[in-house]
Length: 423
Image (cartoon, rainbow, N blue to C red; front, side, top):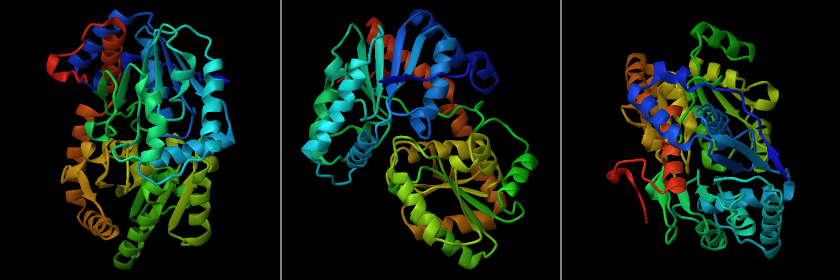
């Protein structure tokens, strides 16, 4: 079964005040070539993760500029999601000895998804490893197939990658956030590198008065008059919530009034998150340590308020495909401390937006520095805001997706020769 996901309407014209006129003009020119193109986005879940968050806005904007777009997700299957979570971790480097039964579970659900694929499409964009075998089962069906990888697969577990790789290579193109993420030996006819982006007009990122943000976080028991550190991320070992808590405790030893809020969204395809969440809430008891999820009323608007009310945003990832929360924090002109991993350094450099760290001690040291030097914190945050405005807002991602669709469906290049990446 494939579930059709509905999205709210969005209008490209609404983004014109936030970006360059040339970018908007290029989007409209590309869209004129693709008007009526039938596109399917296929992923595992409609809520709770970065991919779903991207598609909510991207699909709506693709519809607005004239494409005939559908977004569908694979049916809920607990056994499948347990397996694919392990595959997801293994492709990021965690050892995993996949059993024959687990391979069969993965293929069974991909076969069911392929069997439910009834529409006629010009392009199918398959997101991440969960539906990677649908192309193999379904056949071409007159469409161009694109595999969009949102995670760091630079050093995958060899056995798991050997299982997934043949399915990926049947696609017409593979898209990664950055060149360093391409697994060794991947043979596809076209490679593209497209970083994600945030939607500045979503409820998570739209402009809000600071007093409103502070009042709302106060409703959740946080003292808005005291220093606040915030990490917004799935409860996932790669996001290192344990390391963030350790860094917070080091900061608190020097600055007793500091608070930490960990905010995670529970996704339908991530059963591991509940184990990590329970581990934190049952063992790390502290009146100044707050743990929230979307299931207790902390949705996109509340995340927006927490980030705006924070003094320091943290994204201490050990592996990271991109880390949307980095750009989210910078867009709100808050300094960010990010793990020096994956796509985070694309958004953040030392002194421009915040600081990159590799250890708990570095994270604590940088957080203390920013908390004790608010003028410097404002300076680096403003520099990061300008980077996000230029490079990591949704219209740029829309432009890049339209360029790719032009390339793979019409056979004509939609970019300058030096921008094309073909192998």
